[in-house]
Figure 1 (cartoon, one colour):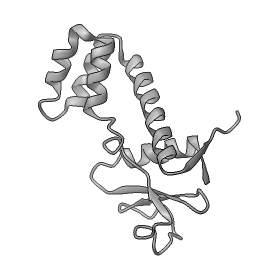
Figure 2 (figure 1 turned 180 degrees about the vertical axis):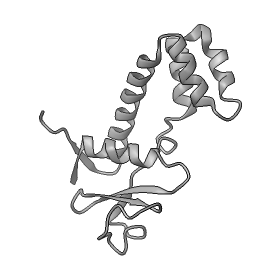
Figure 3 (figure 1 turned 90 degrees about the vertical axis):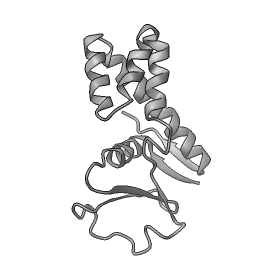
Figure 4 (figure 1 turned 45 degrees about the vertical axis):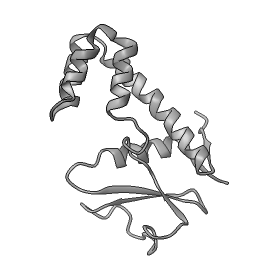
Length: 143
């Protein structure tokens, strides 16, 4: 079983999830635990393995959609934390720009920090489950 630092995986996940106009990816070596960063905007790693994208020696780090941490997570948060505002929040997601409107609304409701904590906890749970499913041991670095 390969080991990966939890904080390194969090950073790779955030990198992958931040992709906008260009493609970003991160891969975990199932032999060493090293995380390889890839972007078509610039060369992040100069010595990428030739078979990075095709080999079963590397595992693609998931994004929020792979881990079901998109709109469904928002709706769970709304149901648990702001149930009286659930319908309004759901309405934000009927058109583009939903996350911006959602976060602006949370700021008005003084619930933005609660969202960030909720999202971070859900992300950690999902990453831990994903690692367990793929036989990756997570290491928490001592502070």
